[in-house]
Every structure is written in structure tokens, then in C-alpha cells.
Image (cartoon, rainbow, N blue to C red; front, side, top):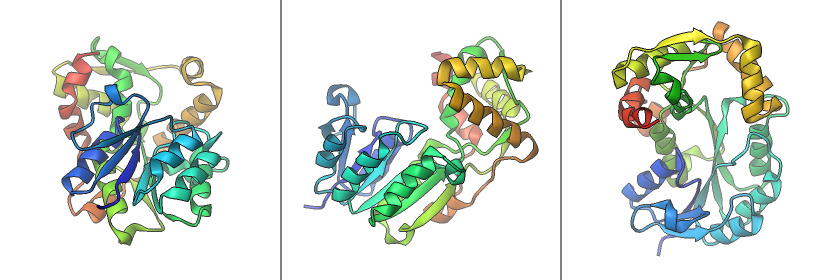
Length: 276
């Protein structure tokens, strides 16, 4: 029998699409999940119960696999070292969902990359600009026709989660991507205010952007996500006003098809916004 690929975060934004990609390619899939009864994974997926932050559970889940997709569930790398050690002892190839900020000093994503690289195993890093699903945070406000947030002129090249999964699948299945660090983005960089407008057009609700004072936004983000994330996020978005997020050709180069647009993503998720 062919060895399965282990998918962490298999029920999440990118993981669920990666499961589908691998199954479509005829590859066996194993998923590490906390509650198999609630995972609702496709038929044929092997499930293993465990927490991604538990090295022993990760090692057991990775045993006998052909490779693994690693999603670290935190912005910092606290606790990641033992988990990466456990994973790479068993899985010969790791595709890690990283971020474009991995090269920044002290970056948690960069620290996880270093741990994976230092294992001596085959690896591919997917340095994502940002997932389109991040805009679901505006769902409650969109229903009222006004989104109040900071840095409406910040331009982001958000990527469709299906595109991340498509690249990840090829990195697991093909040898050409070993040792590569890919910037994975959408096909265009769009201002946040225009993202809101596009979502409004797709859900049929006129929506406008209202610029939120930076101090007020920082306080709200600190309360929700902590001070470190608030400072990093605010500084990053401020920089994108003058220098838009990069647009890469990775999706098309790796998959052979154009990257999906943000409007396509918004159209596919109209029900998610309506349900908020």
C-alpha cells in the first residue's frame, strides 16, 4: 500500500482543500484532528486523534507517512521545536504553511522554518501573503453597510485558500519543489477598502470603508489578539499603504493555471458573509 500524507489543520481553511487535492490525485490521506466525530472529512480519509502541539501525538500520527503538511497554530514559535522534531523523525518530507514575514528578525514563522530546515528532511516553505478568508473578520460590519477599520489604503495580495492547497499538494507529491521557499499570493494587490467594496458587490449590499483612528484600532486588536500581534499587524498594514504586498507567479508556475482572484473568492463565500 502507498504511504499516506499527514495533514495537520485538515479541517481548516487550507487543510480541507489540501485533503481534496490529494484525494483527487489518488493519494492516501491521514488527518490529525482533535475530534474525529466532528471533523466531517471526506470518505477514505484516515483520522488520528491528537493535538498538534503534543509532540507524542504528532509523532504517532506521522509514523509511516510519505510526508506531512505542517500548520503551526500560533504567531510565535513557542513549543514548535519539539513538535517539529517529532514530525520530522517520522515524515521524510514537510510542507510548511509559512508567511512572507518569515524573514523578519524574531519571526515565529522564521523560527519554525529554521527548525524544519535543521531537521535535514526534505522541505518546502509556502510563504503566504495572507489568506482571503481573513476578510471574514468584517462579516458582522458588512451586514450594516460600513466597515470601520484602519489602513483602508493598504494594498494586499490575498490568496485563495484553494490556491495554497494546490501548491501544497504538488510540493508533497512532486520532487521539483524540495528545498524551495515560495511566495504564494493572489494575482493582484487590492486595497482593503476595495476588498470591502468587492465583497459588498458580491453579496448585494452597498458597503463603504470608514477609516478607524490608529490608536483606537491598536487598542481593539490588543484586546483581541495581544500586544505583540497588534504592534506587528499595525506596522505591517501601515507599510502596505506605501508599498503594496508583492504579487508572485507561484500559483500559476507550480499548478499550471492562473491564481484565483479575490472576487472569485468573495463570490464563493457569499453565504459565509450572509450567515454572520
